Image 1 (tube, one colour):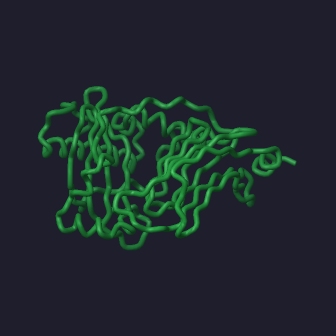
Image 2 (cartoon, one colour):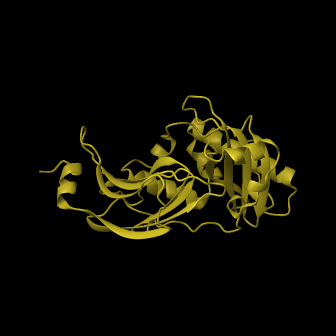
Image 3 (tube, one colour):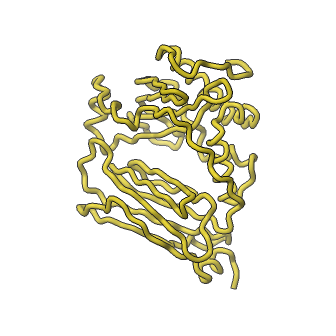
Length: 288
């Protein structure tokens, strides 16, 4: 799309024109990531997302901007995926794809949903983030989409809301590298730690860095859990928080856990506390 991103109208575009504009932005952003081009990345990324990535890197005690490009796999290509919808609402937009989303981790990708999010800033569309919807436990939904029935995408979660997220509070380098882990087949789990680090897990087994890291003493955690549309199972669920050691050979310390056995119903919401005490601090920091 050239060396610069062109300005686009924020609304009122035909879906085909909107889709092409957004696809160009994503391809430009993806090329910046693959090519480790900081200037292109900075130009094509939403402001709040740039700050969020800076916060994540500092919360891992990394280096910014060098570590922007330290990702386990490159962003997925949209080549070969089927574009189902391109929608905009004011200054936000979404592209929704279906197909074999390949994250480059091996194996044979199956048909799933990839949602790309964009915001309109500084006279052009900017890439925000991606959401991956794994349909392995939603096989009926997968069959519906394969047959051309897109009613599953009528849910509000697949529609842009017209609101650009607020810029996050910029944090300093964390004292403790801390991660929140969720195993939540068929569910959406939202987590807030110390009212600062916000997380959303959907039908996944994944860990994310706690922004700002854990704090000495008492920390707070709030979570909400709900079934995803179409989910009818009773799988187990796990939510944990770990403090990671900075000493080779020392395992992470689990400081919080909420588990639900198979067949049991999880709480809709919970508000609890966990502690990083002197013993945990000594272990992960290598002190005696």
